[in-house]
Amino acid sequence: MAKMTVPKISARKKRNGDDALVMLTAYDAPGARAASEAGIDMILVGDSVAMVVLGYDDTLAVTVDDIAHHTRAVARAKPDCLIVGDLPWMSYHVSVEETVRNAAELIRAGAQCVKLEGGRKRLPMIEALLDAEIPVMGHLGLTPQSVHAMGGFKVQSRQAEAAVELIEDAKALQHAGCFGIVLEGIPVKAAAAVTDALNIPTVGIGAGPDCDGQVLVYHDVLGIEDRFVPKFVRRYADLKTQTIDALSSYAADVRSGAFPNEDESYHFSDDQAEAFGLYGSGPEEL
Ligand code: KIV
Image (cartoon, rainbow, N blue to C red; front, side):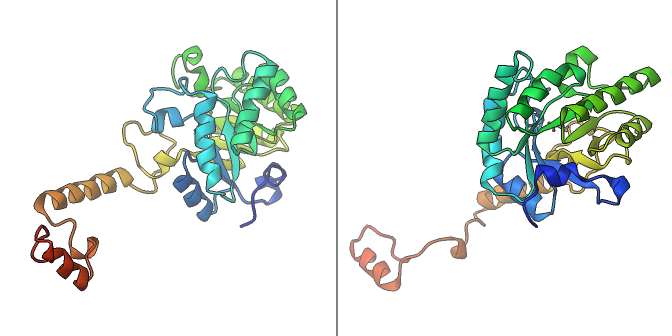
């Protein structure tokens, strides 16, 4: 597969007969390699790293340095996927200057573009990023960085009026120059209406089947964690069970002496074994 680019993503709309976009989060080199070999279009180095890798309860604790660190790991794998760096909370809220500087950190770390949460109130930041030649992906609906303002991780735009506001936000992001928009945690009909209203692609998570693509979190797709499984997640593997089974077998083999065996150990050549034996300190038989 050729390297994915922002213009290639931006042109993809299902209504034009294009294939649905497939986006997945990844936070390290092995994950990025697997995503690339699986033909995933976009890797999001998401601030969800806070919850699925770093053990926090929400995304608010991660910093630009954290996302840059994980972006560098993803980029080292040289995936064919577009690499999207997620701007964490407070990295694009204070000033346009700070926003551009923080986004530049992620681009220097290997991202080809950035994603940020929020609608019309983010326009000055989005315009400044685009002025600095940094492509921007929007994120509307359930925006996890607003967890406290929303009173929890709650489905958004359930009311008709809020859904109309959502469409206006999406149009404003498109008008500003965003190349795509993530739609999270909104009713199917609201997501379909936003998707219809735009010429840029929408990528849904908990937003139903009518978006131009879908995004899921790596650890959810693979069943690496089972603490909390949102309704919209489909698991394609149960790696937590497989991991615990494998680690239990490893522990049992070490304790019983079954690991390591002869083939898993290094040996002297015959002449060195004999010479070593002559020192009198080595074991009689090696
Ligand atoms: O950080 C993340 O994983 C995200 C997705 C939920 C879209 O922003």
